Amino acid sequence: MYNLAHRHDDKLIDRLATDGVAYVPFFPLGGFTPLQSSALSAVAARSEATPMSVALAWLLQRSPNILLIPGTSSTAHLRENIAGAGLRLSHEDLTELDEISR
Image (cartoon, rainbow, N blue to C red; front, side):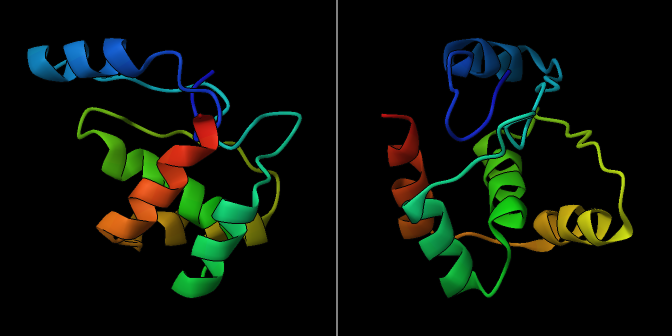
């Protein structure tokens, strides 16, 4: 499991990136307990995006070797997932989101 809140693989992701090896996180949106955070909600509101789109955007900006395969059973969630790929988060947003795991 790797996402905004569960960051135990940070060092592994960095090592894999150095070697050009992909990393595919399990439960990028929290799995059975979806990610919830006031910081995530605040960044989403400022970005005019959903919290899940922001969480996916954070992962994609975290490292170039992260590949996402978020599961979904609805068209609405698929649209949220796709929106995350096009969302660019500012340095300030990324710093605020990084605090979620601390």
